[in-house]
Image 1 (tube, rainbow, N blue to C red):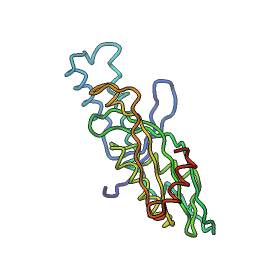
Image 2: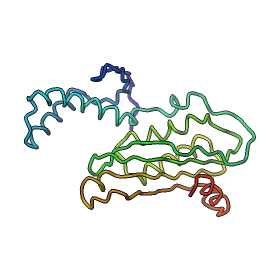
Image 3: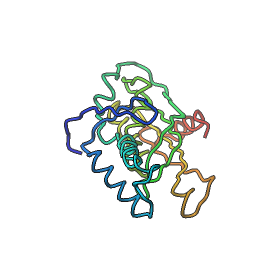
Image 4: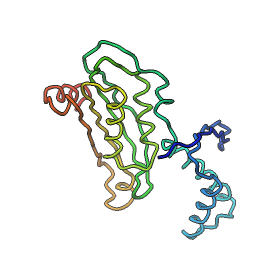
Length: 210
């Protein structure tokens, strides 16, 4: 996406909590009007008491759930890439994520496991979950999200290898369609030594419990 000036907007939610949302150039007013139209089209009255404020709430929620479009990797990392001579696998596992399926705009959610083998550089451990957050807070398919996470870590660190495994439940399969409640989708992205060396790949999978 082309670079845009990014602003921070702060909204009050219904529980008086402060919610920060990165502007991605989308008008909240337009979103609110669109959701009001949707409520009317499905046969409800957007003017009744319980729904009057719903379009505004949903607009803010979608703005937050798609904030990944406006995130900048340089600001996200904030200089937390360090020179370090460490050549064993670094793993952060069980990273919770929530995303929206681009086919039905229904949530899919689960956990992401990340491993990399440094090649002279390491990254602050909290930045790996932030990278997951950046790509999950977009309209996604799980396969692409997993690959994008791996590709970005590979680009930033230029490591000897990167491994990403994502596991998720998809509400588009649970609430509609085949309505299978216990299905879990697993996707992986293996780069460098994790792809070329079966022993390294197996070590990673064992360490994350797979």
